[in-house]
Amino acid sequence: MNEPVDRRQRQERVPGREPVQLHPLRIVPASDLLGAEREVGLMHEGALYRLRLTRAGKLILTK
Image 1: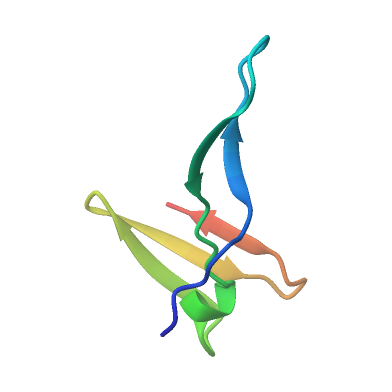
Image 2: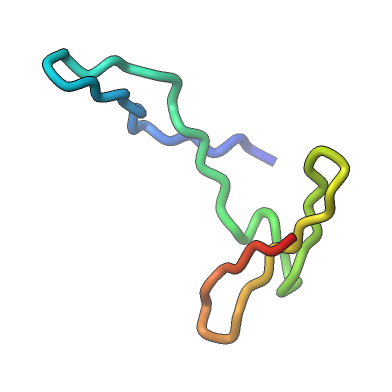
């Protein structure tokens, strides 16, 4: 699987200063996570999260 690349750069804005460039934001298409399924489980720090695609095409992440 190819790593998705986002050419935009995240910036940190501080009032009165020029924006500071941070690391590029990595973009992962939802279809890469879901595949042909409508729901996938994600483990984070020992907790299970569910990423679900609704009939309306929206994504919902729940713990």
